[in-house]
Length: 413
Image (cartoon, rainbow, N blue to C red):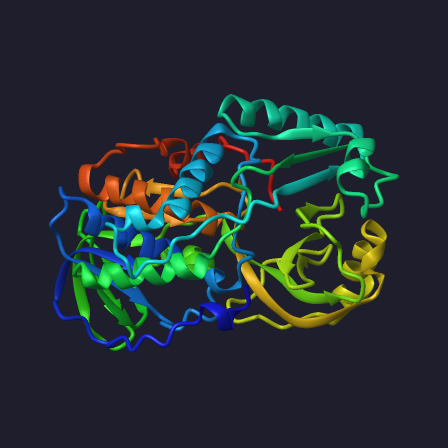
């Protein structure tokens, strides 16, 4: 969804109400707000929470530039389980939010994700991934080229060896609504949000704990625990306490277009072997995305559109894979950032092993929105209990980065 559909006009104060908080969360977009909301729902947590968000409109946050889709087609069991909980949360959001009748009833528009493999090696990866997904109860199907033609005759699959699709709880959902209600109910539950920026973080003399954060406006705020939920800026936040994390902003481009000859059935979120992806958007419009072959880290404020990517790569790929997309017209476009974990494409969560009250919530590599219900819940559990009570996220802890033992996720778009 483009930024304008999720942009909030929240009139945050710049100054906090208190000089000390039990928990300070740096970043008030989807991850920070999910964590804050889950803390307010936990009867065992009775502390104070401050969320510091540098741009309350979040118009340039990853949250505002997302495809807002969810899938269970991951290569690791933990990521499948995380998305399965996310799907349950989305489909039952009003129940999770205490039956609040102001909260909309949401459902996932399950047009599915369709991965297309054009080599036997990639097909073997899809087969291996399906075994992991089936073990978790996911409804992933494998389709050869003929089966794809029969079900979706609009595709050109002459070069395709195998496809993988799941039509159960995979597709579009209203991420903007979930974010809005997490933030609104968090504030109503006593969380303080401010429009400000953390410019430095102070440690205790022994270096094993965070003591305070300093804001751009000069205030020094003491904190019991600190959560780094600052998206693509996560490495910058960690560097304030001398921690190096392998997270960097990678630019991702999106386009919404109208087809002169629309497809007469729902279009799954189709992942072409080239990496270009396209999905149903409704009303004869479609959303697609991709990136350049050269994919460097970019500046935090670099949202410049490179129009040659559309002309030379995206459109030709679409028209080849779906011939009906030869005649299309772009009606909206934008660039956003992945908070890419270049180590293993998985989240970094939990406490730092030496700075015990510095909590990571970083590096989601394009999976953040769909993982936010489970990630916020798990982080709130760690903040409250010092352990997990639901999904065990210890495989995502920073220790693996120190030990150089990746927990690799192969299904990255």
